[in-house]
Amino acid sequence: MNPTDFTACPECDLLLNSAEPVVGDKAHCPRCGYLLQRPCKQSIERTFALSIAGLILIFPANLMPFLGIKMLGGAKDGTLWSGVVALFEEQLWGVAVLVFLSSILFPLLNIILSLLISAHLYFEKPNRYLAHWMRWLQHIDEWAMLEVYMLGIIVACVKLSATSELKFGFGLYAFVALLIVTGMLASSLDKVLFWRQIGQLRR
Image 1 (cartoon, rainbow, N blue to C red):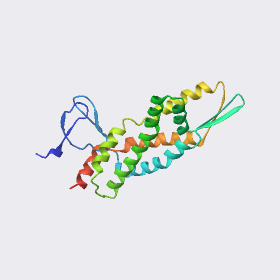
Image 2: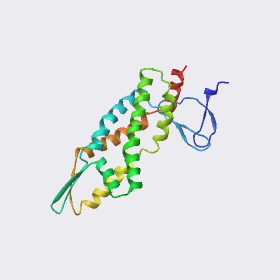
Image 3: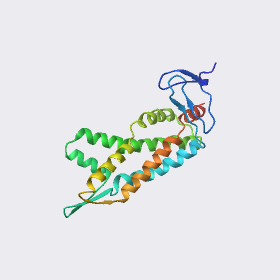
Image 4: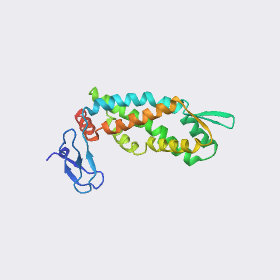
Protein backbone atom coordinates (compact mmCIF):
# COMPACT_ATOMS: atom_id res chain seq x y z
CA MET A 1 0.00 0.00 0.00
CA ASN A 2 1.50 3.30 -1.13
CA PRO A 3 0.90 6.27 1.24
CA THR A 4 0.70 8.61 -1.75
CA ASP A 5 -2.48 6.81 -2.84
CA PHE A 6 -4.35 8.48 0.03
CA THR A 7 -5.10 12.03 1.08
CA ALA A 8 -6.62 13.55 4.21
CA CYS A 9 -9.41 16.11 4.20
CA PRO A 10 -8.01 19.43 5.57
CA GLU A 11 -11.28 20.07 7.43
CA CYS A 12 -12.21 16.76 9.09
CA ASP A 13 -9.07 14.58 8.51
CA LEU A 14 -11.03 11.84 6.77
CA LEU A 15 -8.64 9.54 4.88
CA LEU A 16 -9.60 9.27 1.21
CA ASN A 17 -8.32 7.70 -1.97
CA SER A 18 -6.41 10.32 -3.93
CA ALA A 19 -8.16 9.67 -7.23
CA GLU A 20 -7.74 12.62 -9.59
CA PRO A 21 -11.00 14.09 -10.99
CA VAL A 22 -11.11 15.19 -14.61
CA VAL A 23 -10.98 18.86 -15.59
CA GLY A 24 -14.36 20.47 -14.98
CA ASP A 25 -15.34 18.16 -12.12
CA LYS A 26 -14.97 18.78 -8.40
CA ALA A 27 -13.89 16.45 -5.60
CA HIS A 28 -15.68 16.98 -2.28
CA CYS A 29 -15.16 15.27 1.07
CA PRO A 30 -18.07 12.82 1.58
CA ARG A 31 -18.14 13.58 5.31
CA CYS A 32 -18.00 17.39 5.58
CA GLY A 33 -18.42 18.51 1.97
CA TYR A 34 -15.07 20.39 1.84
CA LEU A 35 -13.86 21.12 -1.70
CA LEU A 36 -10.78 18.91 -2.02
CA GLN A 37 -9.86 19.57 -5.63
CA ARG A 38 -11.14 21.41 -8.67
CA PRO A 39 -8.76 20.57 -11.51
CA CYS A 40 -7.90 23.42 -13.84
CA LYS A 41 -6.72 22.95 -17.40
CA GLN A 42 -3.04 23.91 -17.75
CA SER A 43 -2.91 24.87 -14.08
CA ILE A 44 0.86 25.31 -13.91
CA GLU A 45 1.07 27.40 -17.08
CA ARG A 46 -1.89 29.60 -16.10
CA THR A 47 -0.54 30.11 -12.58
CA PHE A 48 2.87 31.06 -13.96
CA ALA A 49 1.41 33.62 -16.38
CA LEU A 50 -1.03 35.11 -13.86
CA SER A 51 1.72 35.40 -11.23
CA ILE A 52 3.82 37.48 -13.63
CA ALA A 53 0.81 39.69 -14.38
CA GLY A 54 0.09 40.10 -10.67
CA LEU A 55 3.70 41.03 -9.93
CA ILE A 56 3.56 43.72 -12.63
CA LEU A 57 0.29 45.16 -11.31
CA ILE A 58 0.94 45.13 -7.58
CA PHE A 59 3.50 47.95 -7.61
CA PRO A 60 1.40 50.59 -9.42
CA ALA A 61 -1.60 49.45 -7.37
CA ASN A 62 0.29 50.22 -4.15
CA LEU A 63 2.40 53.22 -5.13
CA MET A 64 0.53 55.22 -7.78
CA PRO A 65 -2.25 57.75 -7.02
CA PHE A 66 -5.31 55.85 -5.96
CA LEU A 67 -7.99 58.39 -5.24
CA GLY A 68 -8.03 62.18 -5.48
CA ILE A 69 -10.36 64.15 -3.21
CA LYS A 70 -11.29 67.78 -3.87
CA MET A 71 -13.10 69.35 -0.94
CA LEU A 72 -13.58 72.94 0.31
CA GLY A 73 -11.13 74.29 -2.25
CA GLY A 74 -8.37 71.84 -1.34
CA ALA A 75 -7.26 68.74 -3.23
CA LYS A 76 -5.28 65.72 -2.14
CA ASP A 77 -4.21 62.49 -3.83
CA GLY A 78 -3.70 59.29 -1.91
CA THR A 79 -2.07 55.92 -2.55
CA LEU A 80 -2.60 52.59 -0.85
CA TRP A 81 0.78 52.96 0.84
CA SER A 82 0.08 56.53 1.98
CA GLY A 83 -3.14 55.27 3.56
CA VAL A 84 -1.15 52.83 5.69
CA VAL A 85 1.31 55.59 6.64
CA ALA A 86 -1.59 57.87 7.62
CA LEU A 87 -3.00 55.18 9.91
CA PHE A 88 0.39 54.88 11.63
CA GLU A 89 0.59 58.67 12.00
CA GLU A 90 -2.85 58.65 13.63
CA GLN A 91 -1.48 55.99 16.02
CA LEU A 92 -4.03 53.43 14.88
CA TRP A 93 -1.37 50.76 15.16
CA GLY A 94 -3.60 47.69 15.02
CA VAL A 95 -5.59 48.86 12.00
CA ALA A 96 -2.44 50.03 10.21
CA VAL A 97 -0.69 46.69 10.69
CA LEU A 98 -3.79 44.76 9.63
CA VAL A 99 -4.23 46.84 6.47
CA PHE A 100 -0.53 46.57 5.63
CA LEU A 101 -0.45 42.80 6.07
CA SER A 102 -3.74 41.92 4.38
CA SER A 103 -3.63 44.46 1.53
CA ILE A 104 0.08 44.81 0.73
CA LEU A 105 2.47 42.27 2.26
CA PHE A 106 0.45 39.04 2.08
CA PRO A 107 -0.82 39.62 -1.49
CA LEU A 108 2.77 40.37 -2.57
CA LEU A 109 4.09 37.22 -0.87
CA ASN A 110 1.22 35.21 -2.35
CA ILE A 111 2.14 36.32 -5.86
CA ILE A 112 5.89 35.82 -5.37
CA LEU A 113 5.46 32.31 -3.93
CA SER A 114 3.00 31.36 -6.70
CA LEU A 115 5.52 32.60 -9.27
CA LEU A 116 8.46 30.76 -7.70
CA ILE A 117 6.60 27.47 -7.36
CA SER A 118 4.93 27.51 -10.78
CA ALA A 119 8.19 28.54 -12.49
CA HIS A 120 10.07 25.60 -10.95
CA LEU A 121 7.29 23.19 -11.91
CA TYR A 122 6.93 24.65 -15.41
CA PHE A 123 10.65 24.34 -16.15
CA GLU A 124 10.89 21.10 -14.12
CA LYS A 125 13.65 22.46 -11.89
CA PRO A 126 13.95 20.64 -8.54
CA ASN A 127 14.38 22.80 -5.45
CA ARG A 128 14.56 21.61 -1.86
CA TYR A 129 12.48 24.60 -0.72
CA LEU A 130 9.48 23.90 -2.98
CA ALA A 131 7.51 22.04 -0.29
CA HIS A 132 8.23 24.83 2.23
CA TRP A 133 7.12 27.49 -0.24
CA MET A 134 3.91 25.55 -0.92
CA ARG A 135 3.10 25.33 2.80
CA TRP A 136 3.74 29.06 3.26
CA LEU A 137 1.53 29.80 0.24
CA GLN A 138 -1.37 27.82 1.70
CA HIS A 139 -1.13 29.72 4.99
CA ILE A 140 -0.65 33.18 3.42
CA ASP A 141 -3.51 32.65 0.97
CA GLU A 142 -6.00 32.78 3.85
CA TRP A 143 -4.81 36.27 4.91
CA ALA A 144 -4.61 38.09 1.57
CA MET A 145 -7.83 40.14 1.56
CA LEU A 146 -7.73 42.57 -1.35
CA GLU A 147 -11.47 42.18 -1.91
CA VAL A 148 -12.22 43.38 1.64
CA TYR A 149 -10.12 46.51 1.05
CA MET A 150 -11.93 47.07 -2.25
CA LEU A 151 -15.27 46.89 -0.46
CA GLY A 152 -14.04 49.54 1.99
CA ILE A 153 -13.04 51.78 -0.93
CA ILE A 154 -16.49 51.48 -2.49
CA VAL A 155 -18.20 52.37 0.80
CA ALA A 156 -15.87 55.36 1.32
CA CYS A 157 -16.48 56.62 -2.23
CA VAL A 158 -20.25 56.44 -1.78
CA LYS A 159 -20.06 58.44 1.46
CA LEU A 160 -17.62 61.04 0.11
CA SER A 161 -19.37 61.57 -3.23
CA ALA A 162 -22.07 63.72 -1.60
CA THR A 163 -19.66 66.23 -0.06
CA SER A 164 -16.58 66.20 -2.28
CA GLU A 165 -15.35 65.73 -5.83
CA LEU A 166 -13.60 62.41 -6.41
CA LYS A 167 -10.98 61.66 -9.04
CA PHE A 168 -9.94 58.07 -9.65
CA GLY A 169 -6.23 57.62 -10.30
CA PHE A 170 -4.30 54.98 -12.22
CA GLY A 171 -3.53 53.20 -8.96
CA LEU A 172 -7.21 52.35 -8.51
CA TYR A 173 -7.48 50.86 -12.00
CA ALA A 174 -4.31 48.84 -11.34
CA PHE A 175 -5.80 47.69 -8.03
CA VAL A 176 -9.03 46.51 -9.70
CA ALA A 177 -6.98 44.68 -12.35
CA LEU A 178 -4.86 43.16 -9.58
CA LEU A 179 -8.00 42.02 -7.78
CA ILE A 180 -9.21 40.26 -10.93
CA VAL A 181 -5.81 38.67 -11.58
CA THR A 182 -5.43 37.38 -8.01
CA GLY A 183 -8.94 35.92 -8.18
CA MET A 184 -8.05 34.09 -11.39
CA LEU A 185 -4.74 33.04 -9.82
CA ALA A 186 -6.49 31.47 -6.84
CA SER A 187 -8.85 29.51 -9.09
CA SER A 188 -6.10 28.34 -11.47
CA LEU A 189 -3.72 27.05 -8.78
CA ASP A 190 -4.54 23.36 -8.33
CA LYS A 191 -2.93 22.60 -4.96
CA VAL A 192 -3.29 18.82 -5.30
CA LEU A 193 -1.61 18.86 -8.71
CA PHE A 194 1.15 21.16 -7.44
CA TRP A 195 1.89 18.88 -4.48
CA ARG A 196 1.95 15.86 -6.80
CA GLN A 197 4.38 17.58 -9.17
CA ILE A 198 6.58 18.69 -6.27
CA GLY A 199 6.73 15.08 -5.07
CA GLN A 200 7.75 13.88 -8.53
CA LEU A 201 10.53 16.48 -8.78
CA ARG A 202 11.95 15.37 -5.43
CA ARG A 203 12.39 11.76 -6.58
